[in-house]
Amino acid sequence: MRTWATVCLLIAGLAGAETPLRREAEPRFAIDTTFQDKGGVQYFYTLVEPEAAAKDVTFQLFRPFDVPDVWAKLEAPTHVVLSRLVYTVEKDVSFFNEARVRDTRYINAVAKGMNVTRREDGSFQVAAMPANSFTIEYFDAAKLGQASGLMPAVQRVLELTGVAESPVAIVFQHNRDFARVFGMRTAAAGFTWTAHYPVGPGRTRLVVFTMSYLHTLPPFFLGGAKRVFRESTDGARVLIDALRAYQPPPT
Image 1: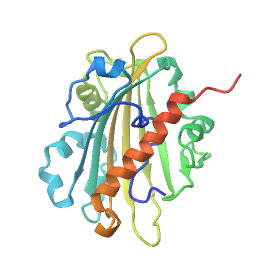
Image 2: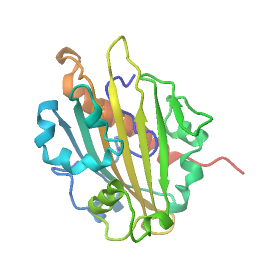
Image 3: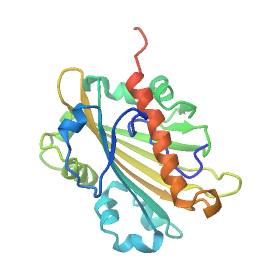
Image 4: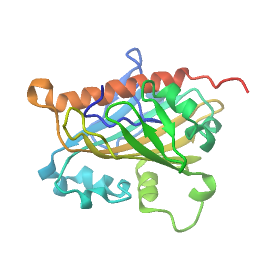
């Protein structure tokens, strides 16, 4: 049960235990293509305390990713989890098309145990605790190629990916309406931005930014902030393993 960690259902992840992982010191870390080509995963992770967020450099760097500006509307400041991940999968970039990322069969295959269903309005419902809903927005190459009018969040993604070329697509996922667990408030909102880059036939590099607002942290006797980190990375590890192993059903 991921009580305190916001689950990035579609695209974030750390690889399995056999895959080299490297935690980077700052969010603008350079992409190590040699490490990536060996299956390595680079990631930056930080947890910002409520009283520090207003002056935290990384939080301010990530602020455009909060498109609905949930932070400004919160009744009280929250803890903020921020991350950037870069990893490569042995799948062609065409695999990550809009139909795929909205397909609940695919979502449930890679986000095992989340029990995701699609609503009539096109949004999605997560049944697993803490129950929540989410929406997806897909920016294809045509939208990204517009000379003007790009959202500030998309512009910030392009600034921070560390890749000179334009991505083939960017996927935005907004999680909200998180349920309480045992009467405790969990997450307030979660934002995930993923850019997809072809790195050769049958290979795609994903650059993922996440921003999660947490009402509370576990008490110290249940692991505190370390538990948030562990739940985030463990859940992501399972997800990326499932993504790498996923085979589309026969058509």
